[in-house]
Image 1 (cartoon, rainbow, N blue to C red):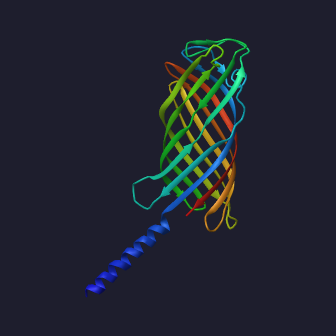
Image 2: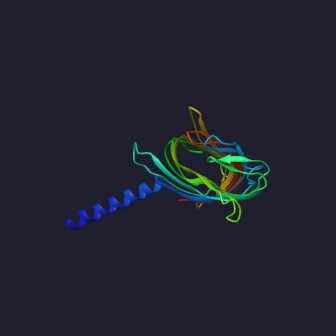
Image 3: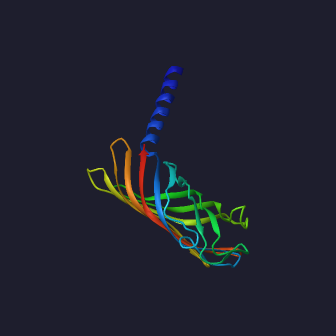
Length: 251
């Protein structure tokens, strides 16, 4: 009798595990994004400093990694984690006087700039549709941990001013995907956005891709990220946009 009970418990556990595996979904992936930089930054009510003409920024490559878990537990949201490396540097000779962080950088000076908007996202979402048309709705918490820093050579004026970018913003999250039947090909799109007071963030991505029967896939897309922020010490009006190539594994 004890052996029969033990066997039944084992069969039940294996059945539950199999059922969980059938409905749970895990995805990991990453992509390289090469955006073009546009816009201005301002610190301590100084000069609106142009990313291109003043600081000399041009397009650069950035890596983005993500992992997501979709589970069958009722009422609990699915979870997605994204890590974005958005650090870049540039060097340029000033063609005009600019003021940043209360300090004036003179024309004809060589200024090196580090611009870091690296961030980590925690997204909690529910599946509104889950068939050949997929629709996810939720909330993203995006934590920035970076800076904007302007420096001149030690042999020159030896200036070094920076503005920390250390804040967390909530974003509405929407993702959709349409599978083309019997082909493995799909089109998808993702939007993170919010607007309040004088601040506005919009991050959109659209792509076409292919996923094999065993879950390995790739997609080619275009992403646009814009940020308008205004607080006591820092303001920015920025846009990054460009194409990306992504690979992922869905199991």
